Image (cartoon, rainbow, N blue to C red):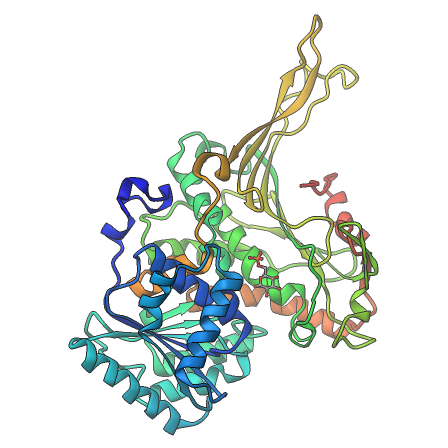
Length: 512
Ligand code: BG6
């Protein structure tokens, strides 16, 4: 395809972003994430000619699956979940180099078989091939996989050369500070930090990356980006879906572990961090860690900085849905929160005194992820008559999904023979400007890991700093049991306790 005919997102991309010969090994090859996200991501990279010429895909799992059958499963996954329809020629190129290795995760001999499988691929290619191990299994087997990668010599393969091995680790990265530290310890006993790619798929979303571009490539924002002009910041990641068939996982997790500790904290860090000295991975991650370290410990007591709740029965999209406690696989006295909200203060020069509100929940009124920056009001002398002048605070909202874009609330004069005002919205929409076929987050992340660019991945100390803030909340909630668990009807915007977090500062949650 001629470069000029390609999607604007792809202009010039392959010229700068070539990956070396690679074998991607997916652990957890018959799992849900592999079918829904990973195989479609690899396929779409193939369609865009972004895979290296010598690209091999190896599925690894406990189940015995013949190569042909694994290729068939992968093809079905593309048909069902890919953003683009299956094109036989593109799939044919990947499928020809797709194989499967069966083995346990704690079975060293199976890892040695995997090592000789990779050696054979390398002989076939005729030069060094980098291995990219994608650990997409339940967290209980992260450690045995990592240790066996080390013991079978796979972690150290080509170390010191450009084609060294790399590992991608799916979330959840630990379930509290202690387990995250332990996991980091296991990783470091086998891999060097520069080989490790901890996933938070929110960082792969176009609009999340756009946040840095908007903040630092436009001169108008930076002078206002501080406590003198900003009144508060609200970060919302709400979903309409409930726990569905993931009850078993979710019971062990909850909104704080599943969404707040990772996705919303990442959004917060990118919104509030200082300008990095460059766009390289370490400079950006250094700034994020610095910011996370400046967040004050939260007041977890009654009327403090946190709220949690479970959804009860309600209506979503005109249909009745059941409450969390009635969902499949959920204990009748479950203590797991499906909604969490936090009020945070950042104790640094830029942000002191500006509240940052974070909320995330399942079965909420709308699916929306956004960052809303609320600016202070100008002095009210000119437009003080509230009957004539309907004024709103200026709000800059980064819409991460859906309707990806950026909007700004301004006050404008209503046309007519007297001066009356009304808030109006200025909008930039990705789909309108660039078309709607945006790459999925996992495409960008898999490509970046193949190239060796860790910018959009979490560094070990970053994960720990975020856990340091969240772990005391989890401990307090676990001690309190169901006593301080509120509820909210499915299809609503969450519990009263969450509104109370803002009411203390005379603020309201925005209705996105
Ligand atoms: C995952 C969570 O990390 O993110 C899920 O485990 C959640 O519970 C999902 O549904 C949301 O991702 P997205 O990209 O649909 O906003």
